[in-house]
Image (cartoon, rainbow, N blue to C red; front, side):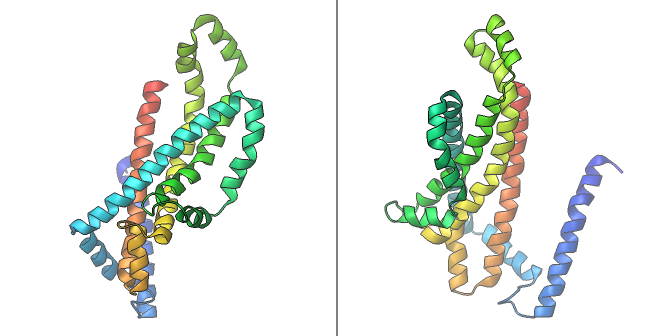
Length: 249
């Protein structure tokens, strides 16, 4: 069996089994308010994707996710460089990083809602969630640089070339791994924050409306679409990071 076909089988067979189990459970429950059938949910997905309002809602959430994610990566790398370079700063900011990691997403969203516009809250929450993941991993990668390579590079390279040819190849694999993981958390953070902050447009707001009006098939449909878009965006990110890594490394 060819590798592509083998990979397709590995993906499609479990999905088919899950859908079958879902179908059987929905027949057993026999209530669309508790567990709608796959056919009903897939029809709701098609309705969402065939409407301009659905794509505007998806686009609004995607924009918030990417904005918060990129800001989180930027500030995470900046903090990692600073705390790796200055031990006093590391000592001062390490408790803050631990505090951010352990605080629930809902707490950040509710606190920010007191003084921040609802459309901005999901972006800030995603940024706050992403920062410690990028920060810690990148800082550890910087502190783990090979000192022997560093000494050799000081002899043969200027600072910029040393960073590009010696330091980045050691740091980037760790950063890429953290960046890939952080994207999934950014999705969860934004959708959760949208449910709480209720911006004008957003998947989270739509899910909250579906819950209030007991439109359970559409609630399941939005959940399924979130999963699908998350997987697709993460796959595209991994591909982009892999290509960037090849060019840099």
